[in-house]
Amino acid sequence: MVERVSTGITGLDETLGGGYPKGRNVLLIGSAGTGKTTFALQFIHDGAKRGEKVAYLSLEQKVDELKKDVKTVGLDFTEFEKKKLVTFYDQSFAKEAEGPDVGDLAELPGKYAFNADKKSKTAVVQSAYEQIFKKAKADGVSRFVVDSIPALAANIIPSIEFENEIKMRTVLRKILIKMCNQMKECGFTSIFIAEAKGDDESDEFGIASYVTDGVIILKVNPALDTRIMAVKKMRATSHSTKPQSFAFTREGIVVNIPKKTQI
Ligand SMILES: Nc1ncnc2c1ncn2[C@@H]1O[C@H](COP(=O)(O)OP(=O)(O)OP(=O)(O)O)[C@@H](O)[C@H]1O
Ligand SMILES: [Mg+2]
Image (cartoon, rainbow, N blue to C red):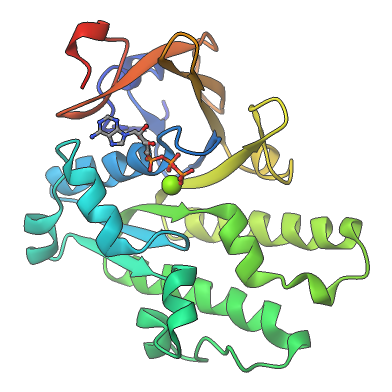
């Protein structure tokens, strides 16, 4: 029997036979504003509520802003931060643009070297992320979110290093496989966030969905003013692939609820 970890999303655990498979990684794919960040924050909020230690690596949006945003759907991290149950790693590009303050990475061995020569940058940054995972493991973290893969890719592999897209994709695949395995070795149940491309069901680079253990698609239907999610893949799990409606409520995202309870 595969152990399960609650998703924190009301209605989704039932679809997945109890939750995400413990110690595995899940990819959330969605186009802009489909609810990916909220979905993932709800996962770590649920962990902290259960007394677990959780971590969130934000490579896009500033953490202070994220925390403010999700308060509007009832997700408040203030108490969990006081109890040191949650760690936010703020590596948003906004922060990088501000100058040399690189947050927690700066305290790690082999500092996050913005000045590293271009050839070694991939390796340096990759090892900096590995250090974050190891630190989180040492802190006892059980749930870990990376938001997002495109930002991570942009950070790790400056295109200048590659003569063509095939080489870049090969390197990205290797990095993602390595990262997924590092997460597993650390014992985290993790969520990676990816942007949708084309059919709205594939990730931008078309790699992450093959590399991760599970894939959940988030979509909006503007004409019907509805949101849907579908479990495209979840290894070791018998699940429906049927799209299910979801909505934002004052208790976070809820799957399959009547429209009148939405906010
Ligand atoms: N309090 C709220 N009530 C209703 N809907 C909300 C609320 N907060 C957020 N939303 C909806 O969720 C969207 C943003 O959610 P979230 O930031 O989780 O999405 P995302 O997929 O991560 O976005 P991005 O692609 O910008 O990273 C908003 O555009 C809005 O449609
Ligand atoms: Mg987001």
